[in-house]
Amino acid sequence: MFKASDVKELREKTGAGMLDCKKALEATEGNMDKAIDWLREKGISKAAKKEGRIAAEGICQILINENQAVILEVNSETDFVAKNEEFLKFVDYLAEIILKNDLKTNEEVLNFVDNGETVNEKLIAIISKIGEKISFRRFEKVIKKDNEVFGSYKHMGGKIGTLVVLADTTEAVAKDVAMHAAAMNPIAITRNEVPQEMIEHESHVIKEQVMQEGKPADIAEKMVVGRLNKFYKEICLEEQAFVKDSSMSVSDYVKNNNGKIISMTRFEVGEGIEKKEEDFAQEVMNQIKG
Image (cartoon, rainbow, N blue to C red; front, side, top):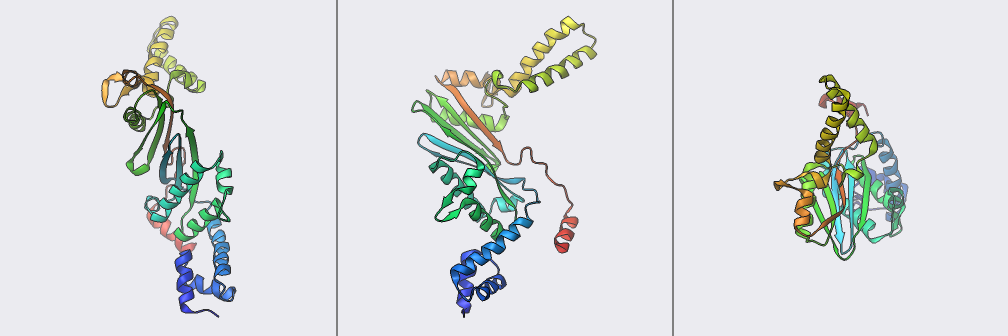
């Protein structure tokens, strides 16, 4: 049999409810390790029910160690959980696992075994404890050379995260560029990196606008080029007006400090995820029915 102190210990170890802990110990004849597994198995079924929910809140995290860095996004259903200590510890843990190991995809990260347990199993345990869908959305691991520096910046408590690499300059300059990228949301570093379909779409829109203004075709073509240049200045990091001094471009600022932009990664929590809109009363009713 088991004692009341065993129920308390199991609850502390798993974060599960008192009644569930009692049932687990009854089902496993008081064996603590088997009871933990029993709850985990039950937790897996609980977590499965949450798979259909939309997790569009969360946090971006950045971890740097010497010449390696990782930026990642982990999502939750509510902003409240995104500030939960257990959630934040798990995000930090993920960053460390990725940085220390040669993992290239989300699947490799989730299947990675740490102390006899996969990262995915640890994630399921967190979901069961917190009671919300949590999803590991994306990451990028960046490696720099010795003559290069990292610049990182997190905005709005980690709602936006940017990681840049600059060559032949200082970390302070790199941080300024990361801060700028967080604020101004560039699509690419240079116009050569802008997706062709985006350029074609913008050119078509501009040409239609110009033609409707009554301009002849040859003039319209020249105006398309001019307005495309303006478009590039809005979306390309190097061509954007520097947020700290709009009299110069980001490229000018970096060159004035003897540097060169090598790479840029910018994550914004929930971008591209369609958020489900429900009024509060309906949400409460759904929970009662569930």
